[in-house]
Image 1: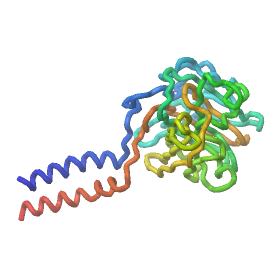
Image 2: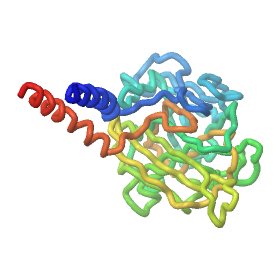
Image 3: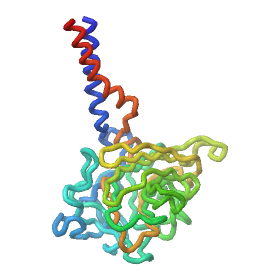
Image 4: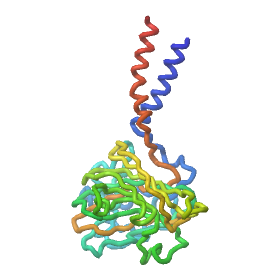
Length: 315
């Protein structure tokens, strides 16, 4: 009886962990706060794949959890919804669909700190996560090639936070910063303040699809004594369905205490650079839950325990 109980318990744990090892792709709908999801399925997937049938993002009102439509640059040679590569961007079971958001820079002047922005229907002052798929589809990753998704308080629309003239240097954000801005070899980042506390991961490969999760929260420090401002970033990256790892920034205050707006910023991109963004979700928890290596090891060992228990029973 004891052996049978142990076997059934081990089987139950193994079933749970084996599904975890292949990736715990938890639906964002399970989060307590979910606002701002958009897979950019605007327009028909006709013409060449990828890149065909470019459509302006400006005025598009799909997705869920927003209070208004996208405000975006209207030049579709800079920012456009286009056909995805055949099969769409994929990370494990996550597929971005037949359309996605493309960012390019025909000239250096095409780079823009306010490529697009949209307001969330449900503002939050708690932990917030930017989840999205990213691919550097064409070109070469150069020092300080930059594309980020930033978070702001829409009521704070002045100075650095302005959607007409601000650079969002003091806003939580995550995305691409080529070669750590020229100081290293890693390309994906998350931060709460420009250059003060950037967390980096991954020397990315052109044409590979990454799933980026950037968590932002508030830690009480001498410079943030009441925990008012977002001051810590935690970056988790997947390549395909493979977890590459997680890293956490040092502490540095942003100027943002409430999140109600999301936007895109580009800088330093060259004329041959083609970047893809898809499956955007703003949540209060990870859309995909990383599996600790120890759990993966336990799961891999459990089949051996099955064999041992069965042999003991036969003996």
